[in-house]
Length: 81
Image 1 (cartoon, rainbow, N blue to C red):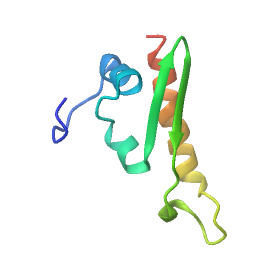
Image 2 (image 1 turned 90 degrees about the vertical axis):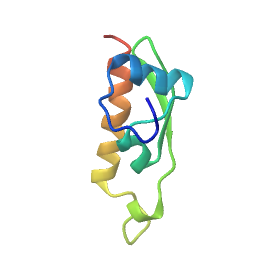
Image 3 (image 1 turned 180 degrees about the vertical axis):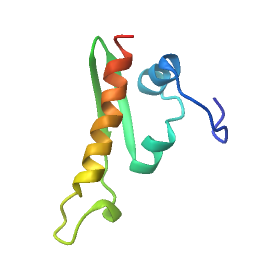
Image 4 (image 1 turned 60 degrees about the vertical axis):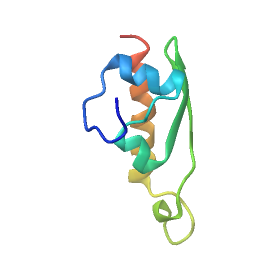
């Protein structure tokens, strides 16, 4: 999938992102999530929290935390499909 192409990500594309460094989904890009690996029902990733997602006391706002969690759950579920 080209970087400028807007398209749907299927299981194959999701697995390419996690295991081969393919271009991430828009959600992952915006939230700055990097999927590192996804295999056998387990997904590992990294989330570098941008300052714009922190509240006044420096804690990540729950909506963004939830979004990051759901994003990683997609990789986990994709390994079983």
